[in-house]
Length: 110
Image (cartoon, rainbow, N blue to C red; front, side, top):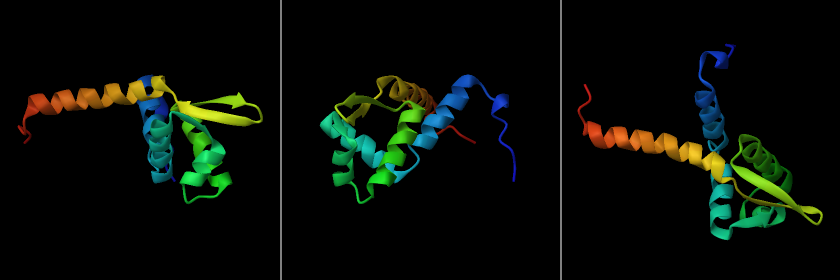
């Protein structure tokens, strides 16, 4: 099995790869969409929305939080989750750069 050589890439490229990997699962997309809809909620609310067990939802929340796409604050004995604007700003900048390129290129490839 090959070894990833992340040290050969810039910090920004590595950060974006982590963000992309975090949103590369349909359950995580569903969690993000739910958080957009309700603004913030606890894990139990997300479990009620998804066809997944609570430990599975918790693992997906952990991945999103570790990537910097969501934040969690304690409210009593539960953690209330919401989107982390900073993580999504990096993704937004990347796709705006692609969009700008595509608008200027106008199918002039090869």
